[in-house]
Amino acid sequence: MQASGARAKMVKGAADMLSRRGLNATTVRELAKHIGTPLGSTYHYFPGGKEQLVSEAVKWAGDELARSLTEYLKMGPVAGLEAFLLMWQVAVADSDFQAGCPVAAASVEFDESTPGRGAATVAAEVFASWERLLAESLTRDAGVEVETARQLATFVVATIEGAVMLCRANRSIGPLTDSSVQLLRMIRLAIETSALPTETSAS
Picture 1 (cartoon, rainbow, N blue to C red):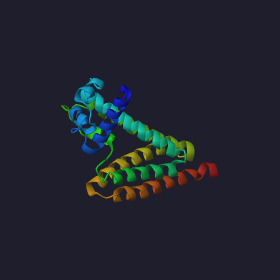
Picture 2 (picture 1 turned 90 degrees about the horizontal axis):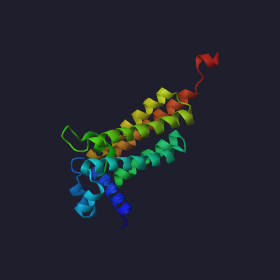
Picture 3 (picture 1 turned 135 degrees about the vertical axis):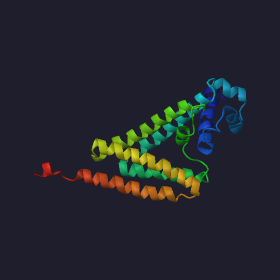
Picture 4 (picture 1 turned 30 degrees about the vertical axis):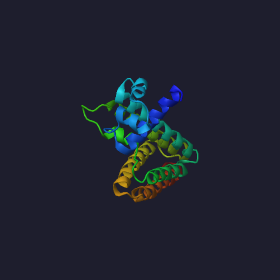
């Protein structure tokens, strides 16, 4: 395996560990066991240790999801969001409720003494990028007012992350399917409202 391939495998493996075990359990030593690679090789590619490894894993996962969301939103904000929500439902169910969101794991499991705080900053940037993609689609493709679109996008991302955690806790896809119904209803209502004439334009 080429160096670039080995490194990519480690980053992907770390993202998988984050989604299943959380930040505290995702260490360089445990990653080597998880993907079956020599410990020395892992430190070779990530001389910054856990901090570097986790930060890169979060960015990789965030970029992968952003690419999927970008593709889905080409269908428009409603169909795109519906596809994005379905993707989450399938991912959580297919993991037998073992895997959540690696970005969320990096954003909540740290304190002042925990390595990986840099990953929390990366996680915030990832969440912001998802929100920006959703908000831009709502404004550009559906005419939703900018501030309303921004708030809706934040609400969507927050709801998805919370629903994923509830699914894992309950070992049921129900929280995501229920949340999907209400999120899509809210988005449709916002779009319909934006299309209504205002008093000024009607007069």
